[in-house]
Image (cartoon, rainbow, N blue to C red; front, side):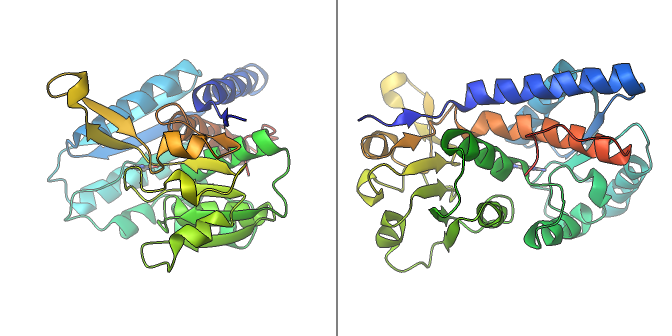
Length: 300
Ligand code: GUN
């Protein structure tokens, strides 16, 4: 049987509709508009695209969007001053500092200067610690999106064997915590893992988040397993014309789809869920800040 294609684009649209619904309720019943501030330092083209997209989608769901674009030479003190001002702004419920930062800025210091309750990326050490101890936290957006798709597809994932390939702070580690929180048996694999193929073959759920194009072939996948591909890699595609490129994931889609029970495509899988979950986290942060009920199904 061919694998079910998990449609992240359609799922993200559903999440955004839920967020927009909750925003309307917050405005009508409480006169509160959730606000998200995005801070971009420098002119990295990929980051500029992301930030533009975040701003557009924030406004589309009815929230307030604020963008701070700082030049690449901005000092740490000036950046921390912007964050401090946002931390103290009652109209801002979520703050995101776009990564990577220019080399002269200390990423850990900057992230940990965001008020934890406004840290909609879930990268602050307080949120990392809360997630790791099973307490209410802000959850990193990409892993949250993966978890939502897994829950939606399976109902419950309790007791399943999950392998996360990649140990980044942004995806791999928080993904493993979320899977553990849903009672999976979790293995975190990485570049030094011995016999990765054998490790992956045991998994009912494979989350690939390594940033290496098409590195997981179909013969590593247990028949019927669910494959979540977090990778977004751009490859040259001369067959599409001169200078053209195409996006591929960290799994070899065709061979994996032939064996898997379900799979997320690239593009149109995990990618669209990340910004949808950022919007969801902003509404959640706004509700918590105001002592109001959080929307159902939009948090871990
Ligand atoms: N750069 C790439 N992904 C992310 C993300 O999820 N959050 C932030 N802040 N920067 C990123």
